[in-house]
Image 1 (cartoon, rainbow, N blue to C red):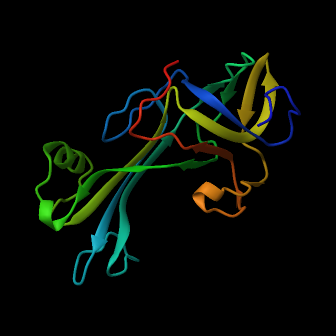
Image 2 (cartoon, rainbow, N blue to C red; image 1 turned 30 degrees about the horizontal axis):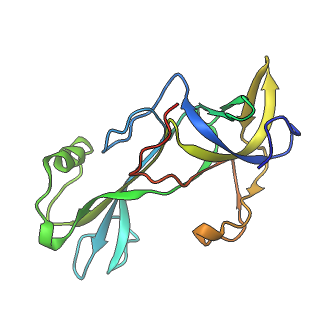
Length: 202
């Protein structure tokens, strides 16, 4: 990884520890506090004659029925050098997150009885719960998580910032994710922290 005090106009990727900005997020279902990125997606399995999650949902496959994704500005810190940078990810900035989500609710035919918290989550979004095979995945980056950020490094009024690049950038090879190089737009955020594990407090 490159240090924060290198060339300011070239997209760089670095792995640092997250701290929240002035507006932290909370995950939709698990209510995980002090997050900088949250993603909650509800999938539904369509069997023979089953209901479709969307117009292109094929039989015997999972389809996305509902999706929520939010991201805000946050800070990353390098404890070795003491440097701190503001990541401009909020307010409509282009962001390409690569965050591992975990299944937090798995509704099968043998356990069709839904928990009160899941029923409440569905009701708050006007989603029905009638005899469907569903799976709720949730991913997040919370304070203390270790992340990699790819963007353009700049200084403004003595504040070190990482902003989205104007042109698409290559993610490079990510063998652990079985991904070949691809070009994406905006800031690239990568977090491989276990969503069920405690992270380092800051």
